[in-house]
Length: 337
Image 1 (spheres, one colour):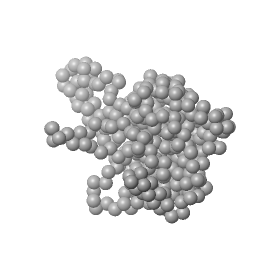
Image 2: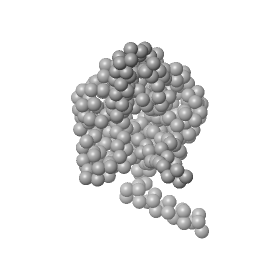
Image 3: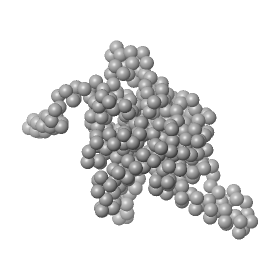
Image 4: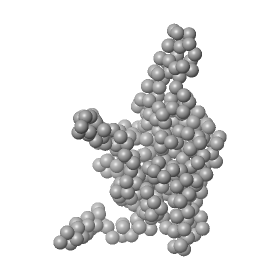
């Protein structure tokens, strides 16, 4: 019985991927993930705004060192800096070290601010040895003059120029709030996307009523967030000519969640929150649980079960999900009575 799968054309020993996380900036942590069973790792996202901020910090420190004729080490931060504060050189070095120290694929993650940023750093990622690149298309449309089509075209253009600049696989981490996600995915595929990650979480601040300030603490994902990813993976997996990979992301807490994602058609399952909660060693628990479930059902490989529930769902739904919607409302009403 085999848990092997393919993602972005990469051969993986299992569908379990440690997704982008603050902890993934440490080689020691990446080694622990591999030892526990991670089939691939996604490095923290490199954000263009942080590159610029980091460069300004280093420039200021260098100038201060020159003026005061003091040791540079007094001003330059320690090598183990905050994960999402990595400068461009440090990030490229992280890719190199990860490739040297790991035997599993290393996927770099990028969120640029301009088209030139996306292209330049994508090239550098490839040169540093990244196995693939994940385009982190995190964006909140604060500019109300932009239409939905404008936003889609912006990311389609970015993918197109990145695809022309590199030869390694490129995936797109999607936002869930597109007016016609299937059409958008088809356009991205035509421009060279090798796969898609569903979904990028839109982080939403809370309000501290005592201080009347925004509370920007990051909340770990919950199981309730799986439903939207499951729906769209199920729909996209039905495209017989899809020729692209599907990665499930968000909400994984236990092995049952991984199985559900595979049953709706995911090629791999990415996770961060569960590893932050329980540590990298929890990957072994998830791996062994998945292996036990697959074996107990008599399957010899994952392709035999992948997408089974997607096919069942599509067979009973010919009205855009209206039947299930009505059934849920009726079930809720009957339960309430």
